[in-house]
Image (cartoon, rainbow, N blue to C red):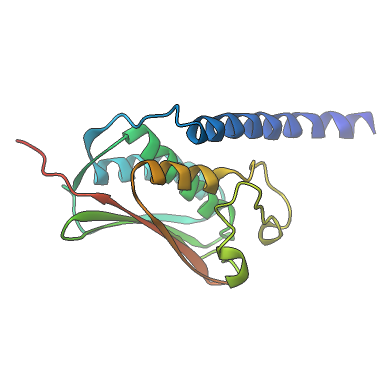
Amino acid sequence: ERERYLKIAPRNTVRLGSLIGDLFELSKLDSASVTPQLESFSVPELVQDIAQEFQLEAEKKCITLSLSLDTDSAFTIGDIGLIQRVLENLVRNAIRFTPVGGEVTLSISERPQSVAVAVSDTGAGIPDDEISHIFDRSYRSDQRNGGQSDSSGLGLAIVKKILDLHDSRITVVSKVDAGTRFEFELPRHSQAA
């Protein structure tokens, strides 16, 4: 019995550390002490970096992680570190809620004044009655994952706060047992040569 508890303790410690880190980050975002450090950056390069970061995790779960980029030169102005955090949270959730053999896709499409970035998966999906609550800090739905998660449950609340700081709105389209698509837009910026 002692051995069983010794195995549980490190997992709970990691989860508690994640929760404390996410709570601290969310409270900083709430307090307006975070001001985005705006700079011009390449959206396709950031998305490719995120795909590389999660490739091994996806492979371990036999999930295909792919890119669908209709441009390789779209630039925006924003806080690259914060937008990276948005994408990491979205991809991490997509992998978490996608079953073995599923797919996660990161895509970019250019619009007249913006660059649309999307993360979609073939996972468990979100019931219609829960979609309006998924960005609430108190919302958590582990039933789609069998109740097993090292997540703090604050990832989507952090995503929304960061995108609010960028005056960007995130949209969600989901179907239970078919997957979910999160999409947001960033303003286009012409990169000086």
